[in-house]
Length: 366
Image 1 (cartoon, rainbow, N blue to C red):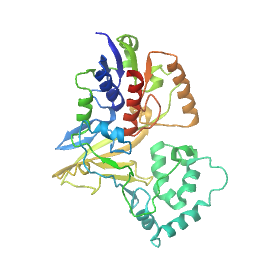
Image 2 (image 1 turned 30 degrees about the vertical axis):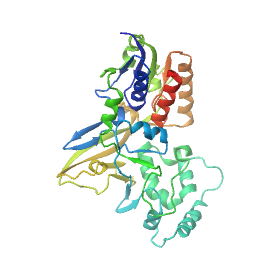
Image 3 (image 1 turned 135 degrees about the vertical axis):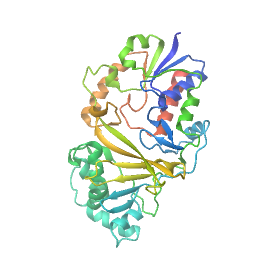
Image 4 (image 1 turned 90 degrees about the vertical axis):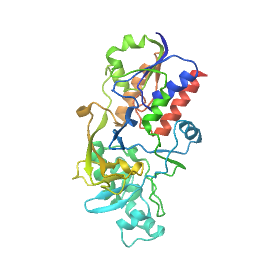
């Protein structure tokens, strides 16, 4: 069978576009490298608990169009993300808010006092900001940087903060009120039917081929459709002919515990450099599940070469310039479409991914 679109990748971008294409009476084939659909939002039920296998995915948006769209497939619960950070034996609320500031400085109680303390420390940075350390201190001061940013960030990126570009943290969320809600978006939560159900509904009636590496058989698979929507890593599509884009990856260690509730919270960030993982996720809290067992996932940042799974693009100027060169190659191929975080070498939240997929669908299918 010949298709109008061959879609490479069954993550959120590819699934949304595929769904819209079928609604427009297009014939669609989806090629997926993994043994399941859904990309990184894929979950697995264990002991009645939905496990986010590839890291916590908490839906949030202020985009009314996206919110209406996703609610076609499931309602959402009222989960609000209120993570905590652990540094040595101390706990801090996130995001940075008045609770955090009082925990950091016990004599700080009011927004005025917190602003004064931070402003005093921000003066340390003078002149042009050239690295992430300077950027962080210029935003929130030395104490918060050393305690809550430095260790976590250096584990995440595998480099000293003095060697990371300031653009990684162009801004930091700071709230001058006692408010631990991580996101300001009016719409937040976890899908009651689960992320897998959303993907299944998006791909209903569509031919999906799993366990197939598109790039290993690119010529044959491309010929099956008039156009290819590619959502994978762009350097891999071109067999790395211009060089490899850099990523950081993550190793996930999912552990089962007897006795139920282990953390008392869904997400803990470990900002101490001596602890090898950056986060622990207790999944039952996402759905307010109470059980005699619990599953906790530990996230270990690792070099991309250790897993072969790209997660976080290292968006320094060298890598961005290389991606622009690959993008230029792609633009010369009239039948090739690109979309998603890997193809676009960018980190997107779920709502942005949906919005961009819908935008591409409107352009293509109008």
